[in-house]
Image (cartoon, rainbow, N blue to C red):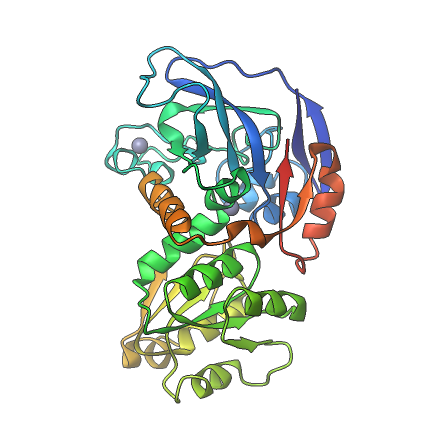
Length: 350
Ligand SMILES: [Zn+2]
Ligand SMILES: [Zn+2]
């Protein structure tokens, strides 16, 4: 089979790989949808051989990209019970492999494994941008019948990450949240927060992305490229108090600082964007206003399943996040366009 590989410096190759067969405890999926996530751009843009380092996750060889895999189980290895996985089952993959037995793995947080995460699929292990993918059966999360494979792909990282962050923030329907960055994760957060009844202030330097945020339920739009005082604009939109909560999905140092400064006293700021730094003036920005800062890295298998149930029950149109649908042999064009960071989300369909 052919799989998409990031070979460094924005280069992509479609390479030949052996069709996977499941070992003990493993399954093979036929991939139906494999999403493109913002953090793929870190891997895509990295120098040759530095892709996994760009995300601070070990070393990687030539692995198949794609960490939002969703499909159907086509082969089950030895020792996998029928309850765990069966041929024909529609599933998402929680895209991490840990030891499976430590306190974090046992509670569905394989990425937090005490031994270090053994594989991140699409980063240090073969991911979903191929016709088939092998994964431990314990990484599977059932895809509710009501949801499309595309929606399942989004929930497998971008939308699930937004969900995880909103859970960490304990967002309530009577609150206002400012969401910095309206790429796939930020826009998902806008969509989910609006569905939870919260009022959303959306920020992005792309007017195209802000226009989409409006469609997804944002109440106030701010383009930091054309506003002098971003923190002041958020205060103005919140009776001078600041937002109850903020979410940074941009990874910009400036946006992170503003996201902390624009929460109200007792407010919470959450960082989900990967990499980079932030500089804060600790007393005025945090202490003197009782501010809580939360770092949130994706979600557990349980969180992924809960996100899927929520999306199904509330009939949230997650598919609407996707502006581009591609075939695997269009990967070069797909990532070139995604790299501009003005479009919606892309997905490979097989
Ligand atoms: Zn573990
Ligand atoms: Zn991701």
